[in-house]
Image (tube, rainbow, N blue to C red; front, side, top):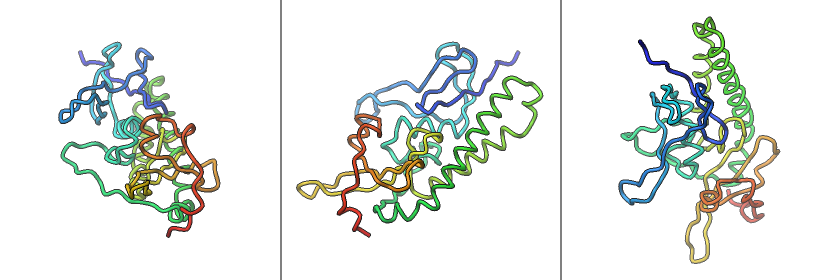
Length: 228
């Protein structure tokens, strides 16, 4: 008798909902092998069991990418569009100025919209497949997943990060500034697809502490907009 395998649902919060028991799950926290500091483990493509009911979960690449991008948003190695591989070196990070981030919006705006639509189609296809046995034999769900993966690759190639999953439409542009004593400070320019312009930023340090952009973003200083 084959063990039942289900497709979990990824929520914008980064949690994974098991369709068998309806409970939320996420990767456990373990001590880092080098520092000993507790950190949340990453999710990888493959199969795992629900910690609540034990049902086998089929983890796709898009689910793994979004889970890791939400829980490890300060680490570019887990940026959307990449699937974690222990043998794969971290990617080169593109640093943005405010002007370059603003100039990229005509390209990013339709890309983010297409990704949200593809993600909704993928989620709908999985929901239909769970309810209708005939739908499981249709290629629609796989096609939608493939489209999501392709769009995630475009996002990664653009050198930006998506915060909070594909439905929120929040794009982060990695950058930095200099604090007192000429010490660099990592930050992100923030753009939401509900806004016309890149008008805010958040430091990586503060975002790592709060995890919520809405409460910690600040207006972009006027002098930063002069930098080419």
